[in-house]
Image (cartoon, rainbow, N blue to C red; front, side, top):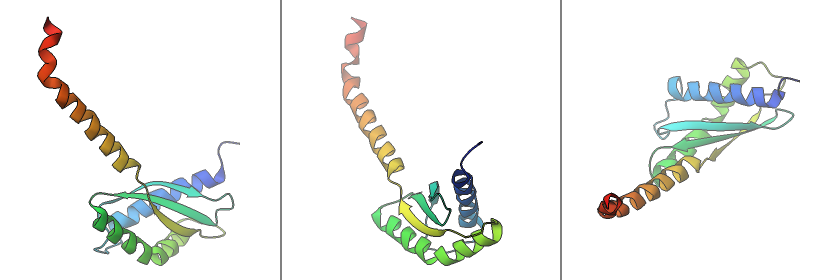
Length: 124
C-alpha cells in the first residue's frame, strides 16, 4: 500500500484551505494564518486543522474566531473541491510549534550575544 488514504486526504485539505485563506476568505479577523498541518481520522469524517498566526495573543484569538465562523463555508467548499463520501467535520487548533521555535532561536541568539564580549580569549 502506497500510503494511508487519510494522509492523502489531509494533504489535500491542507492545500485547499490554504488556497481559500489566500483567495476567497475575506474575514478581517483572520490575520496572517498558516495552515501547518492537518490530521484526519481513519474514516475521514473528522479533520483537525492546525494553524499558526503572526502576531500577539489578541490577533491569535481573533484569527481563531474568524476561522470558526468560516468553518461552514470551508467545509462546503471542501465538499465541492474534494470528492469524498463524507466531508469531514473541521476543528481548528492553534499550533504553538512555530512560536516555540522563534522563542528558542531568541534564546540562542541571546546566549551568543552574552559570549561576544569575551571573544578575545580565543585568539590567545
